[in-house]
Length: 227
Ligand code: DC
Image (cartoon, rainbow, N blue to C red; front, side):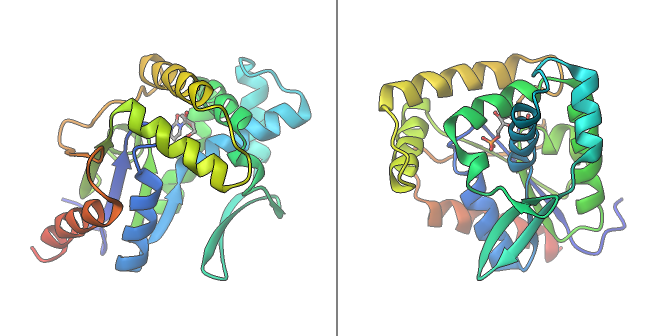
């Protein structure tokens, strides 16, 4: 039995399934802290490329992680991602960083370092974490676990729209191909592959809007907090 005063909410699923939107919405509605763990792997990918550490150099990547100071900062109602005081929020969303993040995330030293940071950030509860291994590895004892999925064509369509909105449009076919490849790498790697926790509640957001997914998730959390 957990001794936390507020629950840990774990949201896992592939990219473009709506995890971040759901996690942000839940955190706002419940007054919880949102920890976007994908953003942390993105910071490692970005910094590795900038300082010239190879994406398969496990030891050097481990040392790089030990030097990172990642923080989520709320500014004007928006969450900014900071590394060592530098605002990397926009840089980590570039398409090439998506690939780098998936690449570096296959290294055991990177996973060990980031899992440790995530546990330290979330151990007291009152948090929503979204990622690929939250309910299986980071917080297997999370009070609420959601596995959010959607068909790959729909996820790629959302990512294409998001990139266009951000002013960095990409060819939709290239976005779909990159997503299929990233899904493959994230779910077949030997270290903490993407898969649902046995006790996760499954949502499919292909034909559900964000508000409906959020309402169902709030109901799940309330069921826990009211019991
Ligand atoms: O959720 P995202 O697209 O921002 O994540 C970027 C990459 O980071 C993703 O392709 C796999 C990796 N990742 C991971 O391995 N484990 C997590 N908990 C979160 C992300």
